[in-house]
Length: 121
Ligand code: ADP
Image (cartoon, rainbow, N blue to C red; front, side, top):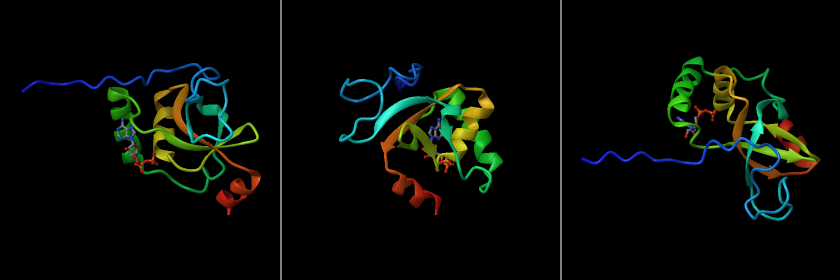
């Protein structure tokens, strides 16, 4: 049987220039849907990181898989007033950290401070 290898553009590395879906200037579009951005790990604030432990086995499996085939599903990130916040995708984030990868592919939605407060409740 033929063996197909799916090649996806997961190696976008530019932080500022990568990503808006409509070719508009860098950043997250105001009125459009989420943008896919390759963000540096250290630009993503993770306010709940200390309160939730990851499953080390899951992280290890993700590290192996991400090394082999890359991140297949971006993590969700909220952008509020130019700052990025991550509340989920914790195992994928840690896998990237442990692999020493500088950036992670994110699905970025823009929100308000009220949205942020809602996530922190
Ligand atoms: P997380 O805390 O990151 O959401 P989970 O273990 O709950 O961790 O889910 C892992 C997620 O990572 C799944 O949604 C899966 O589809 C996604 N994923 C993205 N890239 C990969 C990959 N290369 N190998 C395995 N899962 C991947």
